[in-house]
Length: 282
Image 1 (cartoon, one colour):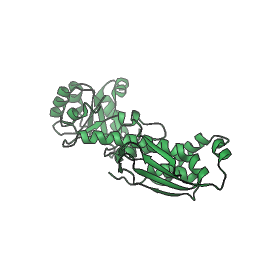
Image 2 (cartoon, helix red, strand yellow):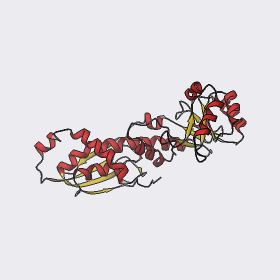
Image 3 (cartoon, helix red, strand yellow):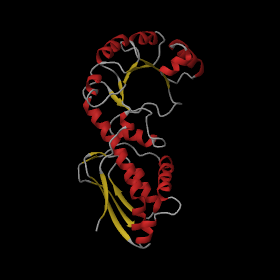
């Protein structure tokens, strides 16, 4: 489940902002009061619970930004870790290690939680054609990291932002006056490379959308019998996506309807952070 690293230019502003938030105007007054500038240490980051590990590179960057001379070794992004497994070792300035510790842990714990939750959903739908994807329900300013964590867990990404695909939702339709008006207005504005997806709540809406020749339909909050009817109506004419309060208990049944994609907002808005700790190796 390994995933290629993000470019450092993408990660650095996120990590810098997190460090600045934590250090404040005066820096780490606890560490600087206790630890001499020349003190060296070795720290070990370990998984206290098994899961899929994500956020290794931003965590490493947190340490390196406090002291570039630190020596760091770590597991790969997307690794499957067992409880007790070493994820990272950091050697060098004790001050630098302690200053970056919380930011590094916050990132790798949350992102590993997302990757692990995604993996559990992917496993749950194994053997069906459905793919698990995330939404834009991400933590502000962490979207690129959280969406990468979804990929590390075996899922795929929906839109990164409002500018890379059209998704006409119920509120757009309400303002436009009808599904047809909304689709036609979009087609007059966008280029031929941009895909159009429309959210529908009923089979009647779905029938109207299919007559407009869109690229994908978002089948929102439909029960299983209705989802099955919707897939039959589509007949492979466009991509189908199911969404709406889908969880570990319901995702398999949704997948077995034959839907192409299952979008799960909980992957990024409600993950349980993976239990990971960092200790000075004395």
